[in-house]
Amino acid sequence: MAQTLKSAQKPGLFARMGTYFKNVRTELRRVVWPSRPEVLASSLIVLVTLAFFMLFTFVVDGISTEFVKLVSSLKVGG
Image 1 (cartoon, rainbow, N blue to C red):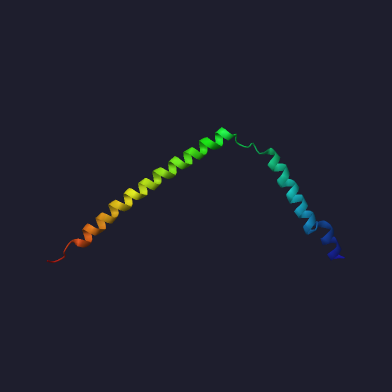
Image 2 (cartoon, rainbow, N blue to C red; image 1 turned 180 degrees about the horizontal axis):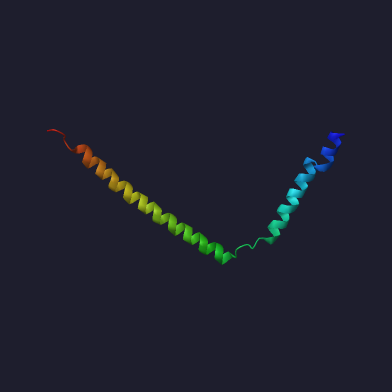
């Protein structure tokens, strides 16, 4: 008896999956998708930021490499 009450209260796996995908579809209809110019502007910002951080990393790496070379070339206790 307890088993039948339990199964009557909770829908099956496929019913829950159906409800889930129905809710996903409903939410996707509410999404306000960006326009083409907005996507292009955002992409440009990402590319410029990426280029900046690539250059920044390259410069910091070069400076730190030279610093390590300088420190390792020092003679200790001569």
